[in-house]
Image 1 (tube, rainbow over the protein chains, first blue to last red):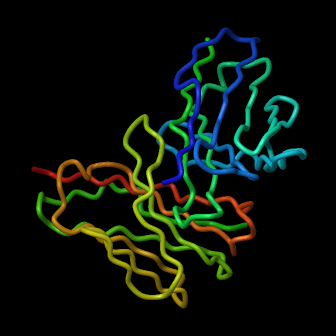
Image 2 (image 1 turned 45 degrees about the vertical axis):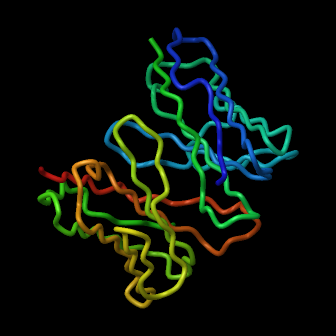
Image 3 (image 1 turned 90 degrees about the vertical axis):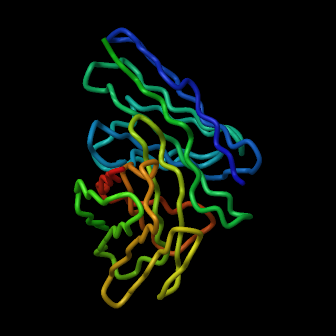
Length: 116
Length: 114
């Protein structure tokens, strides 16, 4: 089945620094990837849709200058949290769909970001 | 704005019983419906997806879809303690080359008691 690899799984950073999260589709090409954020005891909220070779589409209320998304190849999308603050601490998850298969949407393993 | 509603629970069932999870959605144009299971601190994992009205069975799981009522459910037969998790209902609009995101409900927490 379709596999999406996400790294790192856990990161702790100081306030004001930047953190990059990588999401790779291992056995299929993902022209589109989705980035979600999940706060404790809440559901997954879509942050942005990442399209290979073009600018990402951000959901209302998500700062595009703070959450930089790059989708430079058909298998890799990155999310960079710039100038991170404690309120950015959350569980970030990427997702992609294998258009060739019938596997539904596959999720990466998630990144637990803690900003101290 | 698409909305997906789920009872947050917790839903407690004894081991071996049938667990019934329900979900309603507001966008009548929704075409694809998914059930994910999420353990605490982990990423969601796909259980089933359903596109057509009626029932779809996969092992101990049965998804039921009623588009007229905008209702989708998941039945878990012979519930096991390992089924204890949060179950997320998700819907999307018609598939367009993979660029349509999922909209999630808040999830129902299921507890299977041994």
